[in-house]
Image (cartoon, rainbow, N blue to C red; front, side, top):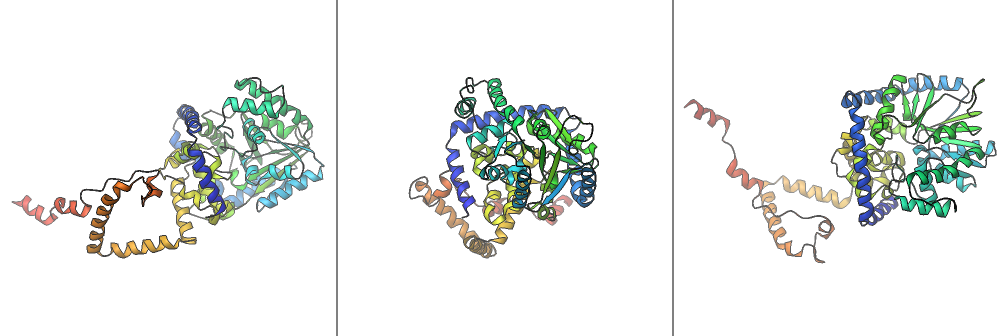
Amino acid sequence: MSKPAAAFQAAASAYVGERETRAFLRQSLAGYLAQRRTGEERFQDWEEARVAASAAKGEALDYLDRYLADFLTRIEKRGTRVFFARDAARARERVVEIVREHDAKCIVKSKSMTGEEIDLSETLEHLGYEVVETDLGEYIVQLRGERPFHIVAPAMHLRREEIRELFAGKIGPEAGRSAEPEALTMDARRAIRRKYLEADIGISGVNFAVAETGQICVCTNEGNGRLSTSLPRVHIAVMGLEKLVPNLDDLALLLPMLATAGTGQHLTGYTTIIGGPRQPGEADGPEEFHLIILDNGRTALLADDEQRDALHCIRCGACIYMCPIFKNIGGHSYGTTYMGPIGSVITPHLRGLEEWRHLPSSSSLCGACTETCPVRIDLHHHLLHNRRNAAAAHPAPLEKLALRAYGWLAGRPALFSLAGKLGKLALRAFSPLLGTALDPARGWTRCRALPEPPRQSFREWWKTHEPEPASERDDDDEE
């Protein structure tokens, strides 16, 4: 078992025992579902919008070479410095190079899952730089020394009182006097606003990049994105290469879909479109704008005809909200940036199938993720694809032997029938042992109930229900 798999198993086992936390999470998710339904009703036809959104993302990926060239031509013309990073290490190195060039001390960071993916904050902090997360949820988990619990709602697992105690201990005596959301927000705002004025560099992610205009789009609900990208002298944006969309019409469709699927809103509170550094005559904006376009396994996934639509993902988090596994094990159990169904699909591609093969198997395959995805990614089938690929790459010897034995047995009807009868007798014989220390199926029965042995097999049932041959029925009809 790989280290990530062992850590996942331990964390998931611990979380399922926290009944109050799980109940709190389910309550939070119920509110999301109600908002989501209201948001979908604003669309003339939500299902048609999903089809159109999927087509827009598919168009960008199918002709990525052309759209990327158009995008680069336009954004570089306005003075943006673009860097392609083949992997996470190279992206981190480039950010560090920029920070050192400007002798920066303080860095403010807007919410960026791509930044989380490459461990950017941890790298900069390790080198001695002060990095302040400016998204409220990200700021909270940063103070706790945690990773985000969910890609859209990083601190959704925490209650108000927990946050109040955190602020009182970490921010100072003036903070944490009330657990009311407004008061907690003001506590964080007072602490973070000072950092905007001190920061030398602002770092952001990218929600969308528009090829037609050569601009990036950053969506936030707190306004922190605008402050992080406009107040510091230097702005660094880290963008996965799949974030490209062909034109502004596609952006106009995807923005409300992102908000609806992510939080149930019509639009996020602040949608900021950035085309480069401050231009002559402009009142604000950074003096320098650096755009880092990250591959990190994406082109390999793009080359996979079977699963490439996983790159359509707009990071709304809807599939995670709907996943019954996430509801019972929580976001931290996954041990990776992208949790839930989408994480279980793309993480083996981005970080290696051998170490992360356990994630695709941690799914009920209920299909709720595919049904809710606003860009129609075939998520539950991709989970099966990853399982198949993992089994083909690293077959388990005992499992392989068992399948061969089953194939041999299934090809011999008389023996197969006898094995079924013996199996039924064995189930009845072992039923008194179920749940005890002597239970041979304890690995299954400690968390599941075994079915009652059937009274008769399908073969036995079929003998008494087999329909007459078609020729005999025709003869009876003629009489």
